[in-house]
Length: 125
Picture 1: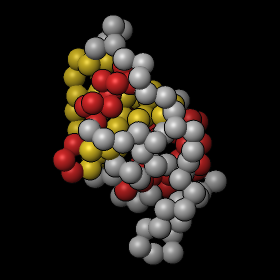
Picture 2: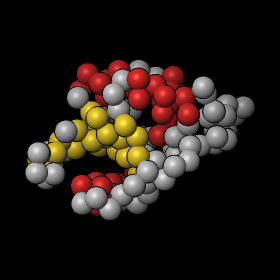
Picture 3: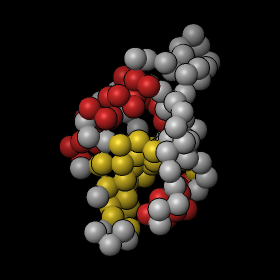
Picture 4: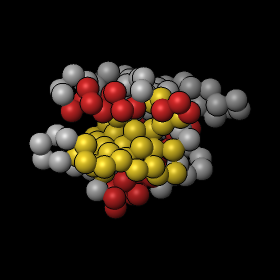
């Protein structure tokens, strides 16, 4: 299994999936042990309007642990076989370890109005 985590400086989960600096990709064994991690650059543009869902699918990524994320991105990722666990925060390595230990559950709400410094609002459907 592979897990993606939208990441920003200081190894923290980015609060907005579509604007992350990069993704940390974790490969996990059948025993729920991280066997490797790598960095994947983030495409330009809002996450739901980029090709990241297709890239994740091609890379075999099945789970994304995310901070804030809109409905459009959730739908697009889901259409490519990626399940999203929302409202995660903190150090990416710690959140992955907690997820693998069964301590992280989906937060249940999507971003509906993240301002982006312009008129763009993350509520694509």
